[in-house]
Amino acid sequence: MSSGDFSAEDSRFMQRALVLAERGWGTTHPNPMVGAVIVEDGEIVAEGWHARSGEAHAEKAALAALKRSPRCGAKMYVTLEPCSTPGRTGACTTSIINAGLSEVIVAADDPNPLHAGRAYPVLAKAGIQVRSGLLAKQATRLNRIFNHWIQRAQPFVAAKIALTLDGKFATRTGHAQWVTGQEARADVMRWRRLFPAIMVGPGTILADDPQLTARLEVETWCPQRIVLDRTLRTVLEDAPLPRVYTDGDRSKTRVFCSKLASAEKRQRLLELGVEVVPMPSTLEGSPLLKAVFTACGQAGLSGVFIEPGPGLFSSLLAANCLNMMIHYTAPKYLADAGAHGVGGLRPPLSMDQALTLDEVEHQAFGEDMRTIGLLPNT
Image (cartoon, rainbow, N blue to C red; front, side, top):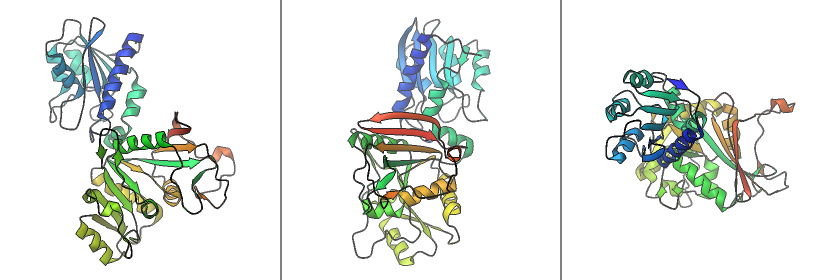
């Protein structure tokens, strides 16, 4: 196996494979997004991607799309190291060998320590040339949820916040619709579609009565919905219940509360088909949040997308529970010290004590700016 020495043509083919991989956005969990192309004589002759868990992997999908045997000298470009264990759909290395491909170019190695690099000697033994590392950073970034999950068996946790230029979530009355414009809000829906679960606190439920669904042009999709409400104050006694407890997807709603929360309120939710998860009353702050995410992992949720208000956001930062920030900034000022902003955690005495994101990306959506970055030590 070799790495490096990639041509502009190699990059073009792998970039196409990455575009194909992204077609599995949100549909492949707990599997990764993977794309593959087959190239003969400098032209793409077949394409494939992993569409959803249990269906054909990208390599097999591309070979099936070819509908014939590859010609002598055919190459495959694939965004993730081919699997070398049978699994549910058979090892992709076996399919590649049987097809008679001459070369396989890989973007990123398998992140699973038990499998990383195992495909390469298998392919090399069959006489197939292998090169790896082409656009590896982009391929790894695409599968942050899968990579984190497969290595740690804990959900990858991202928080989305939308703030004015002076760092405010909402006016002092709580009015926040809308901080950002339509294009940025549409991008939020795309992120909701990526994660298998979405989480909010009680303040968001009471202020906005959100649906917590991904409303896209092609579909409306409901992830697993998680509400953190220790005292069950979102179970209203003198007003209609929030939509997440009464709509057609209420069975996808899971409420984490204290064991001391009202038994009557818990029973009311259970009768509606909402899952209730009582947590030890001794757990607060960081221990409670860590226990919640551990429970999410035990439930098989590989990623959690959080849309926190000021209080929950501050608690998440203090608990060091976040892996990634998705931060939208609108060109607005509320210019009001009493407006809802990011709560205080610890007063840094110098700028070098600031919490600084890694692997930062910026992108404009209309007049708004999105900043994505990883939290340190994640």
